[in-house]
Image (cartoon, rainbow, N blue to C red; front, top):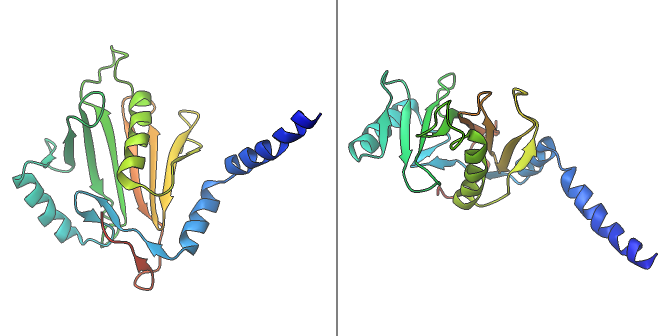
Length: 194
């Protein structure tokens, strides 16, 4: 009997942890009044589109950013960060005057429909771990898949910065969304860009 009772606090703690919803985490993070604007490779929330184009041009000249065939998306090659080479294809949401949201995707460069070696399910796990290492802060939590194609997705919120990772329906890509949850600007404390 005593042994069974000793497990109750552990079970309660675990169940409280699991019940933390994305909405609750977003509210808690926004209450902290901390602005986290850094995204990756010098791109940040609030950057004007002209600054983004200028920065992307400079990064292209340095061999870090590449453009796709139609020149409408930016590509970053990760050759050594994952178990196989990965490409990150992205572009900011242009419905805002400054960068407030970036939609993109990552996929193993060697993915093919006839091989099972490079599925998005594998990359999603690796990407979750890598982004927790890159960004620090809160860990990712499981959330329902935004499109319902798979049982779950991952989300991470630090201050106003929300990152969501979810697999495409064909298990080819991991969709990556960076979103600024803040509607308030200058009164938030700023965390230095990473």
